Length: 115
Image 1 (cartoon, helix red, strand yellow):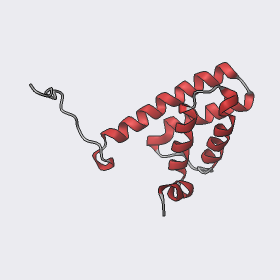
Image 2 (cartoon, rainbow, N blue to C red; image 1 turned 45 degrees about the vertical axis):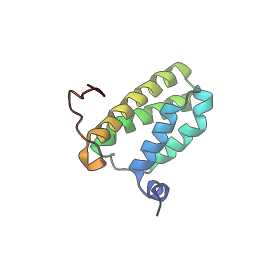
Image 3 (cartoon, rainbow, N blue to C red; image 1 turned 120 degrees about the horizontal axis):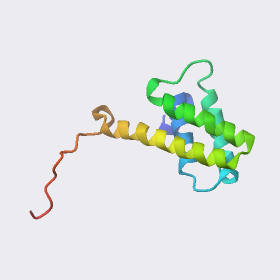
Image 4 (cartoon, one colour; image 1 turned 30 degrees about the vertical axis):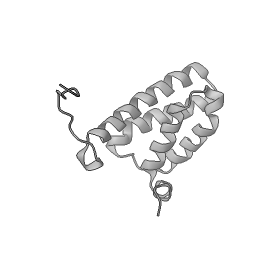
């Protein structure tokens, strides 16, 4: 089983992958419609249950973004995509710091090369 197969069977990776794609898309609302559709489908995988707490901020921002796409509201879409990007940055930063995810604490002072 590849990581893509796992992403298809679990809602969290599907939402995070689709949300990250939308947040990184540099086009406007029109260019992001297809990706937002994938995000909406991924969010539906949560069905009647709440997303895990570490994903809840990004999932809420993603739902709001999908609503803006549905409404065709460009300024609101832009604002909500920025909000989604900030939520994802916090999500990924937590993963980067988590030693169980391969993260590690970086010393406050790292000596420079040659000195």
